[in-house]
Amino acid sequence: MNKIFNNFFLLVFFLLFCFQFSQADSSKIYKNKYQNPIGVLNSFLWSDEKGGYIGLTSKVNILSRNLNNTIHPVSIDSFKIKIAFSKLQFKNQDDDNIISIFNAENLEIISKNISRGLLVANNFQDIIFQLVQKNKKEFIRTTKGIAFVESNSLNLVFFNINNCEQITKDNKRGFYRRSQIFPKKKKKCENNQKEILVTSTEGIYKKETNSEFNWLVFTPKSWQIKSLN
Image (cartoon, rainbow, N blue to C red):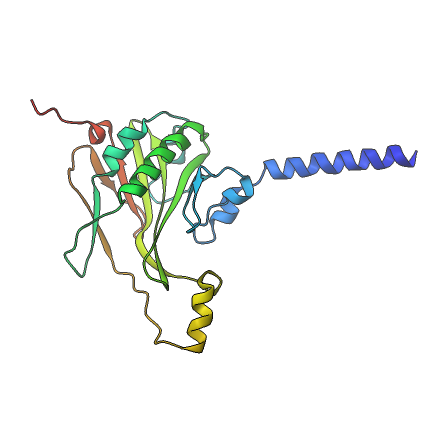
């Protein structure tokens, strides 16, 4: 009798665990500075050792967005996304240097995985991304945001672009230990205001939202290739 009771108890416990896991809400983890919950949900589309990732998250409610307008899943070819995103540039407001938001490697990664993510996302999910570039031993540069589709448009919202972040002590490893023996003057990690530029405005629009975010809307015209004829 005890054996039957124990087996029944284990079965109930297992079913409750599965239910709780399936109900895991990525937004709870997402609130922590836009960190992706994919480690919990086990659905990374892509990640690297530098801390970059692309995955799925619960829909993010930002100013001017109607969550009911989201249309997922949807198919947009990665080549079309690559064409549209290749037109994105930025410059710091305190200098005139113009830089592509996505370098060649990251452009390939983000276009491929956003295309894949839009195809597997449901109507309650966005694609979330963080791309990381090593800047110096002490600093990294991160670009974070979300992507989603509304009627006839691909939407890209940047939370930050090429932001400087200091590497934690754990990630410094040997460098950190050496710096304690031979301390150097601490360098400052500065973030300046960024202005988004595009090489062509055709099919690309800016939408007003929270002041700290940048929302871009891409219509099919943005990924069309013009004929030379």
